[in-house]
Length: 474
Image (cartoon, rainbow, N blue to C red; front, side):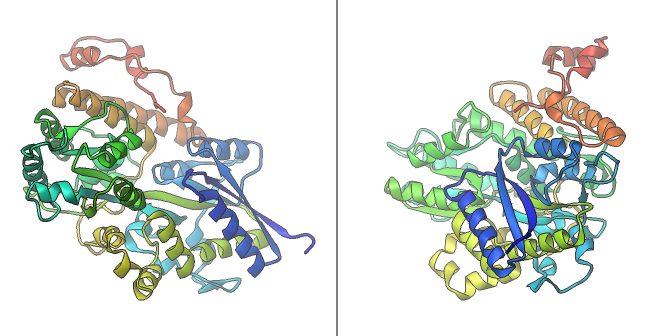
């Protein structure tokens, strides 16, 4: 068909086997159903995509759909065109209460609450969740049974008991447990306790202006992690985040337990099969001494450009709905272990016997759906919403790495809070004046922990030192 309407879609290439092939196939399948459209999918570098979208906007060109990682949500909300208009528009408002778009059923109300909640602000679902994950515990069944452990631990205290049993094994692994030093696990640990990263109810009641990486909930997690490490149970690779290193440690049976993302289910079971042992899956452990509040999610979402002509916007909306039809969402889950994004996809997997044949795939869904929306007073499933979230994650992981290497937890996390606050202040100052900034242009850090100690003691330090805390590592 001549003069087809183009829909340009920019997505991060997550480099999973066949990842972009699936995107291209989805686009081609949609075109067969809607031959008046041409869906052009571009796989972009994961780290560079938000900046590339901002650069395109500065040149007057924005793709119809752009996929951002969850910690870039505030950046997407703050991004502006050259004329000051928002770069993106609300998907829910564009749908306008309709039940279908170009014949594609609208699935907004079918999205599972943890994912819908995260991308909803003031009652408005502004973008379309595309990938969802949470954190799980994976156990080497062979090693655990040898240690007399019959079921996966659910609490921090039970993890400690299991670690002690594994450590007592003759010819057992060098350590009992490992996980990557990544912000997602810290966020999950805070969510289980109802802890927050920033003020304004994690940025849900207004723009976040205060960061806190030394809260009681954070310190419980850091101290527990440090204790496992000091007792010889936790294996720290010394790298941040080192997903591959911790996976190899588990595959080589140098540990009995690994905490990782739910999208690692396929990889973990494949590693176990290749190395001749069995695996079981458990929930992310929580502190039994603190009421369990909720769960945290991670993932990506597609944002629709503001100002599209009607035909292009309708096509973009229809493509979003098509991507999340029950069959498409179910197949995406099967391929990459991601959460089924809708209740209908989950029900389809159940009806077709997928969960019966693969029960380890069910747990992530059950885990995030443990509490109904709104049961707790803390937006655990909703997650934090604030500027330079990525920088905040880098600050916390560097700080925790220093604690594992011997730094005082209270002092190091207090210093991390100063770093995180400077990042948040700098982001807000820029975003409120001229739109989304490129955090890679932040100045390097020169303020040392020693300088921070002097600051806490009331001694003078230069303003330049404090300004230099603004940093985003990559």
